[in-house]
Length: 168
Image 1 (cartoon, rainbow, N blue to C red):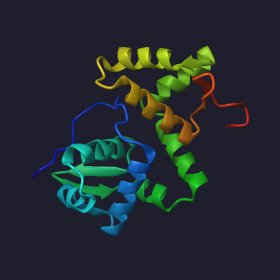
Image 2: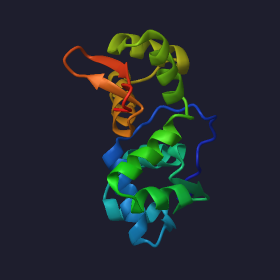
Image 3: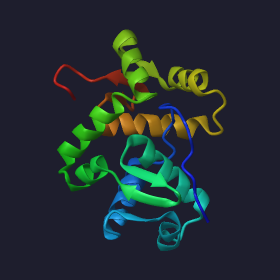
């Protein structure tokens, strides 16, 4: 089965979590950085419908490249994979800071100083139109941004906050 990479602009909602994407990168390392998407499908014993969102998210971030059914680690993917956690987060923060919707959310937070989940959901709907599972999309957006240190999340109030002056 030939899996083609979807053609999109640099606007994509992440469809997979941080751990799933780094798990994919680890598996690719076992293949010396390159293999067929079909091999991953067999090794992971997951349905292609579960694998493709992980591949799409890793490709969107720039960690992998997919061409004609072959998936390979990019230089950024190799660098992130070999980095210690603090460096991995810094690499990811630098990357997400220039990608939509993360750059736009960070800009909004700079203006508004906080965004609740409802406002973030409205933003996602305005930016991307109908999203089949808005709750999951918002959760993934928050988890990637917080993991990378692009912004903070206050679980008690349910609000997204800009990084503080110390960069936390």
